Image 1 (cartoon, one colour):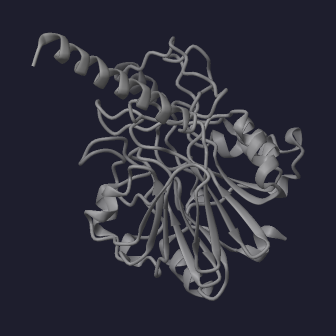
Image 2 (cartoon, rainbow, N blue to C red):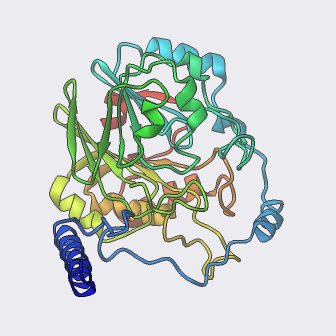
Length: 355
C-alpha cells in the first residue's frame, strides 16, 4: 500500500472519530463531559481558586473548637431501641447520624447514605466521629431500599456495604457507583442518571441534580455522578438532598416537582476559613441560611437539617448549624416548628412530623 493511501486512511479514520465524538456529545446532557467525567448543572457556582486546602491549618484550627457535646444532642441507646420497636408499625423518620436516616413508608424501609464506622475515610484514616451511630449495623430492622447519593467517604462506606445485613435490598445510586454493591453481594442495583426514575413497591424514586462533586482518591475526581433523591409515596413528596451548595437548579426543581412536603438538607460543613477566602461560605455545602433558601426554592413545606453534629468536617462550632437553622426560620418564611432539628437517635412518626 502506498504512503499516500496510508495517509488518506489515517485522515479518514481521524475525521470519522472526531465527527462521531462531536455527534455523541451533542446528544449527551450538559453534565456529561467528553472525558467521561461529570459536572454540576449549568449556571452553578464555580470553585473559588483562592481556596487553598491545608491539613496543617485545618488541624490547628480544629483544636480550637469546643468539643463538649450537649447531653440532649444524643438519645441513649436503650431508649432508641425501645422507640424503634414501639414505632415498627408506623411510618417514621429515624436519624442515625450525619446523613444516615431510616425512612419507613408503608411496607418499605429506606436507608440513606449509611456509614457505621468510627472513621469516615479509607481504612483507619479520615475524620473520626465524635458521636457514635444511634444503633449498630446489626440492630437495623429489615431494609428494603438503600439510597446512596455520592461517593465521598462520609456517605459511601465500603465497610458498611460489605457488612450490610440485608443484601436483598434494592439499591438506587448514581452512575458508576454500582460496582461497590455488585462486588459485595448485592444483586438488585440501579445506577441512575439525573431525572431517571424507578419504582420500588408503591414508592417512586427520581434521581435529581445537586451542586456538588465526587472523589475518593487522587485520580478519580468527578468520575462518578452525584445527586439527590425525590421520594414520592401516596400523596406525599420527600426530598433527600445530596451534599449540595446553593444553585439556581433548585428553583427549577421546585417548579418541576414542588411543592415538597419535607426536605432533608445538609446544614453543616460550610466554614473552611482561613483556608477559604470567605468565612461561612462553601460552594459545595450550604450553610444553614442557604439550606433554608433551598427549601424555599423547592416549595418545601418543612425542612429537616442533617449532615451536622456527628463528625468535624469543617471549622464552624460543632453545635452552631442546628441553632442557626432554627433561628433563621422566620427570615426565610418558615414557622420555627417547620424547621426541624432531630437529636441523634430520634424517631418520630411521620404523622407527627407532617402535621
